[in-house]
Every structure is written in structure tokens, then in C-alpha cells.
Length: 251
Image (tube, rainbow, N blue to C red; front, top):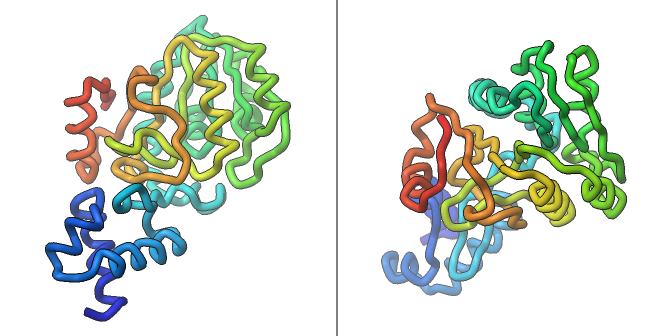
């Protein structure tokens, strides 16, 4: 089997099964496990898969630059954002993560809602300029890929606040890999923000469901629910698996 044919088969299996176990697939196809692992390494390097112990998971398209992500799954993000905005209750204090779904949440929020929003995303903060909400901006080094403050200064600033809820943005929502993102420092910042809130809810637009990225943010036992697109059926298997694990799925 030609290398290009093998790689396409691997991508097809990732899409259909949500994972590849190298040893099992090699036996099924009558190929060497080394060949499968080599192909997976190359797919990982090309950003088309995420290698894990024993195989690979589907790579999330949400790791693209901020400008590109603004054009991905826009309808799904809008639907998730409308549900997320309902969790920003009058009088509450909410930490709103960075990312395009977080920005859509601001757009879905009633401008007259009296609340406090804490964010490390200057774009989100600017979008709240004409809202009644009090806005607290956490500063630090600007991570331009996601338009958020990061680094030691941002973590230190985050440790001074507390909130009722954290609306968490990730690039991967996978039943086994948990909640993931593409940058180690960004993952650490998200963990810090989650530690400052009584509840954490995940913004799970369609392109993230069943996909994974390199760095784990949180495991499923550390979140209170995941907000998903009720109109999207592509991630149905993943969502069913999450519900079997006891994860609250808000559609």
C-alpha cells in the first residue's frame, strides 16, 4: 500500500472512529506497526492528527490563528454563545476566556445585564465597552495567536480574583483526552482561571467535539458541564460518551 493511500486511510479512520490504535490497525491491514507509527508522526507534523500513547486522535481545526478561527463553525459558535450567555446571570461574577466563541458570547449577552466580567482577552473587554457590566481586565504578555494575556504576570493577576463561573474555551473536547489546547502556557493559564471560579463550563462549538490538541487543560472531573451545539449531530458519539461518564451536556 502506498504511503499516500495509507495516510488517507488513517485520516478516514480518525474521522469515523475518533481514534487510532496503531497495533490494532496494523494487524487489521496486514501492515507493520512501524509503518503506521511513521505515518502518524508525519500526520502529526502536518497538523492533521495528534499522536498519543499507542496511536493518535483527530487534530482540532481550532488551533489555527485567531483570524482564521473567526471563519470556522460560525453558526455553531453563535448557538453555543447564546446558551453560554444565559449562564451570565444578573449580579454574578463570570470569568470569560479568550477565543472566538467567547467573543460571540459577549455579542449574545444583553447589554443591560448587570454583572461583572473578568477576562484576559482585550478583544472581549473592548466588546463590552458599551455594556452595563463591570469589566476587569487581567494583563500580561499578549499571546497573539489567541489574543489573550499569558505568562507569569497574567497568572499572578488571575490569582487575585474569584468568580461564580468560568466560561472556558478550548480547541479539543475528547472523551479520552479531556479538554485540550495547542499551547502549554495557554493551558496553564486556563487551569489557573478555572481554579478561581466556583463552576467551570466549556464552550464546545462543533469543530472541537471529538478532536484533540497537544496540551491538556482539564480532565472531565474538573468541569461542571460542556455547552454544545444542539443542531450539530457530528459529535453525537462523543457527547453520548461524555454523558455516560456523568458529564453534564448543555444543549
